[in-house]
Image 1 (cartoon, rainbow, N blue to C red):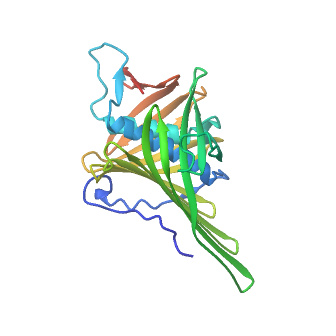
Image 2: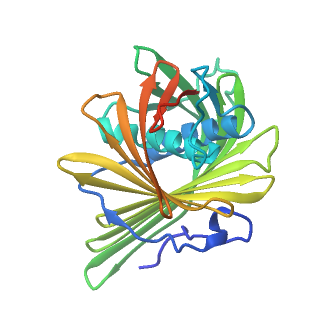
Image 3: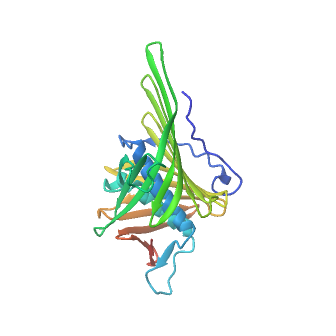
Amino acid sequence: MKKGFITVAVVGAVFATLSLGLGGCKKNNNINIVAKDVYAMSAVSGANYLKDLEGNVAKNLLTSSQTRPTHISNSDVSNIKCGIQMFDQIMINNGISQTTTKVLDNDEYFGTYNFVMKISLPNYGGTTSEYKMYYNETETKTNKEIEDENVEVEVSTNLVGIMLVDGLEFKVQGKREFEVEGNEKESSIEFKTISLENPNNYVVIKQEVENDEVEYEYEVYENGIKISETEFEIEKENNKTFVEMEFADAKLGKVEYKIKQTNVADKFSVEYKNGNVTDFIIVQELADGFSFVYSNGFQEDVK
């Protein structure tokens, strides 16, 4: 079977400049994520990353002579935050949820979009962040063939719409492909979130599933240039699900993060590795963001 449309584009700017060959998949351990959930995770994560890119990434909680360890960059902080936001639902089963309905005729976007996806992201402390994505999804190709008693089905769709986040609007585009041949299954999704203020700033998130293997890739573009790329792999260890991230940046090189849920539901441990440099970070979810506590005792609030 062909490999769908997800490929790792290596451009000469940043992330992929290192040509890491990000292709290794891991077993998904019966982790099942439907297409709309991937769209929801991608839309929220992409929009929040663009907010960080075009605003302030973090605010210090403590007035202290201490600072964040010098080897931990703003990109590291954003990557860890996005990793937790994207996979919170998988790690603790209490993360992003979505409901999709038809746009009502009294809605201001009626006539432009057919569907609205309402996305909820619970915050610890009892509050919930709400997002909306208005979109149209159209089928672009459907093939069905029977060969040697095997049924082959191939379906692909395109999505276009807008994402509303905290009064801001982002353009979104998505592509989905599903293919079945006998007992073999492949699916791939590519989702792009674009800044309306600067259309050359955008985030591309890709998911590919082949039989029992799942892989995510996360690409960030600034001024039309790829500045970073991350591969996510979902694994299980001692009955706990965790996320491994491999980040590549032209300036920072290859950085690895391993995010695990602790015995406290709203707290995560992060193992950091950049070449020979290793570190340890504790991240706790707050009502309106995250608290990062570093190995040197420095703490900052990440919105």
